[in-house]
Length: 243
Ligand SMILES: [Zn+2]
Image (cartoon, rainbow, N blue to C red; front, side, top):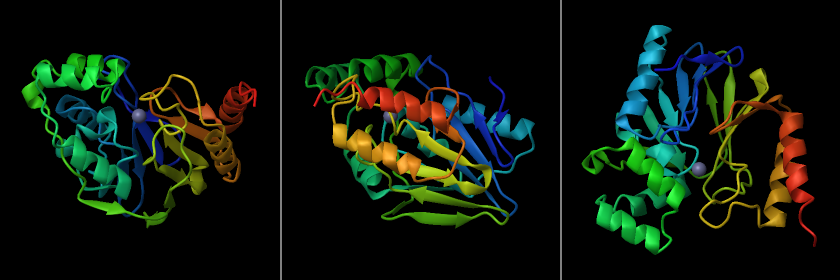
């Protein structure tokens, strides 16, 4: 088990793990209540996270907000606490995933049909020794537009910004702590390519980040970056486009 890492005044995170492709899980600690960002990839992942919270005497969250539909951020949802909230597109995509069968034969079929990619396929098999343990759950509710949560001593904004990663990605902005939780939102769409293919989307996303005043650019599967480092990294990608 890992330890929670303090990022800022109100924000902590349980660090990512490349084994099983577990993402960072963020805990935003307010005076009145707390919010967790992302549900983790399995029961075991969620339980580790909640043990780490307990070690710090942190209360259970009122909400768990899901950044996007990918398995590593959602398959722990059944065990995550508080009201689970996602964007409407995430909710709809998970309704589709919920119909999937989790046998190795069905998984192989989805891999061949390119419904699944090999990276996720392999990591699902690493995380789940018994595929019967996979239970896809739906969020309790969904949002359709930018939404603000008031935690007493700070506000967080859930923003529908442009993402190069998925159509359903949302971003969590905490102005008071100068933090933007991007999760995987600024990655390429790995279901299509390892590279950024849509110049307009990449440009719009960079402009979206520029429009926000923050310092910590918080990712799904890496340690937080500074905003300036992230913008430099993304501008380098933009410069690779020849037209
Ligand atoms: Zn993702």
